[in-house]
Amino acid sequence: MYDIAIIGAGPAGASAAIFTAKAGKKTVLIDNDKSMTKRAWIENHYGVMETTGPDLVETGKKQAAKFGAELVNGQVVNIQKSETGFQVETENQTFEAKHVILATGVATDLAEKIGVKTKPGTEPRIKTIIDVDENGRTNIDGIWAAGTAAGVSVHTIITAGDGAKVAINVISELNGERYVDHDVLKTK
Image 1 (cartoon, helix red, strand yellow):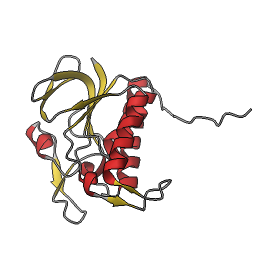
Image 2: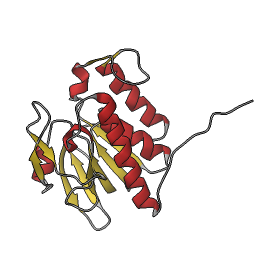
Image 3: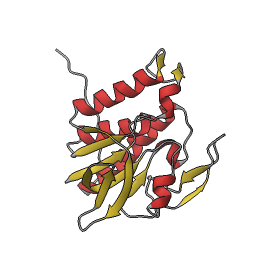
Image 4: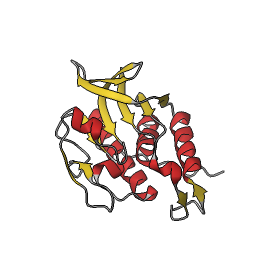
């Protein structure tokens, strides 16, 4: 049983996985390798002079794995409520998780299929988004959404920040108190 299953390993999903795994939460990050970031050239991401979208996505996955997130390549085809959380089904595997974060970019078909409410998007060329509250919660308790799918700007720095924000909110709920991840520079 995973604490958190994250669907999508673009900037929002990978950022969420970095935080959840670093917090010691058992995390599975499932990605179908179709992130729109894979087509991007990026020069406006804080801390990065310039990079390709594929390099940014790979770096995010490596960071998440460094902290213990399990990376799975696959297409999630269904999510069902279970006694202890959710069953997340890919084409050939099923994962059990207490919470799910949808970080599916422009794809909202899975959310709609499982009964998550959507609404019209406000970003250019983003027709539909997942309806979330300010913390990233959807209408289904235990299912959260982050990044472009949740209506934030498509810019990688913004989606990454939203993924981190939602992850902090999920971790806080699991812990029963507000979670903060702030490492201190080691001095000699």
